[in-house]
Length: 58
Image 1 (cartoon, rainbow, N blue to C red):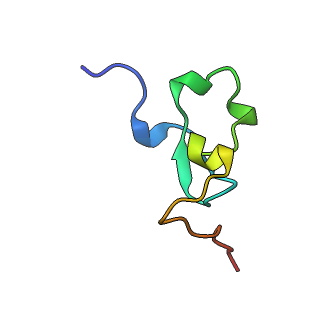
Image 2: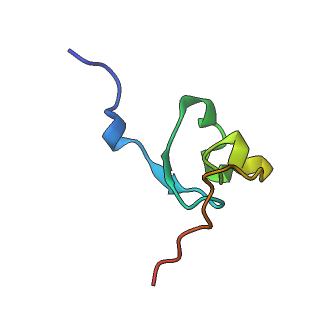
């Protein structure tokens, strides 16, 4: 019998830099409300070869 919460039931947010959705991680337990970026690369603002501007929904 599996324990815990299914990954599909975890809360998600949209990254402020790349616009991709990302899920809650255990290391963000205490400060999930302040998390804005999906990764360290997005947080530091580094350009990557495949980076695209944030998607704009119309």
